[in-house]
Image (cartoon, rainbow, N blue to C red):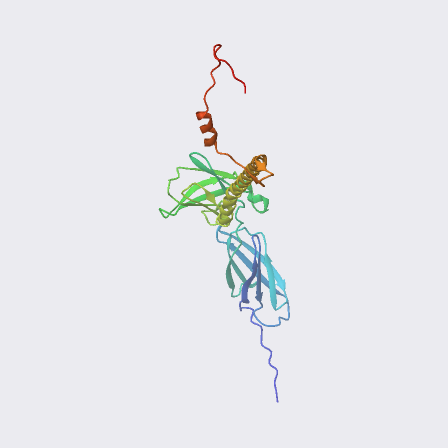
Length: 294
């Protein structure tokens, strides 16, 4: 024997398994299940979105017979914080969750230019890659002194550069640039970070090693080239002198070669000098001395 029992749907139950499927900068996809399995009629849900930063509320209505419901909440703000409540239209028990949207990206190509008494921070406009960013919102700049372990807020600007003065010698600094925070610092963009050492050279933490290697190569390669050129010229000069000396000696030896003896004959200068010293000097002849010719 058996009996079929049909349960009476309880519309006072809350939606089940409410969770976030995907969250972007300006939207969030949420998903939940009906209060009971296989609804036999359309069910009306109320989706309330509370902006925890702006302190505003929005209510959306969703009507469906599906057991599993997926809904996309639009027109959210980057870096926002929201409280989402889902319940049946008859104001039954509710299911809730909190979601945080993705903040704006960090500015690209953050660089430092060092001047005599200050530095300049430069970066690319965030509007080039973020359609939700308006330049009128601006950027804010922070500085961290690692020696003093202090973080300071330097200010904000709507330009793509910022001047920093009064830096102390021997201190290491970290600068961050991000989309300006809204509503008491609760909605901010991702920060771009740049290290600045005590020698006054700004280095991007992701490219410092590459830039140092490039600078060293730029110095070493020309020096090695000049050394090779100098050595080459020196070898050529030595070779030419060796050839000239060899040719001079060969010519000198050939001029003193005796074919009869089969060898070269060289006389010392001492012998020639002695003969000249012993030979009498002829001073002339007298008229009263007869000349005898034999």
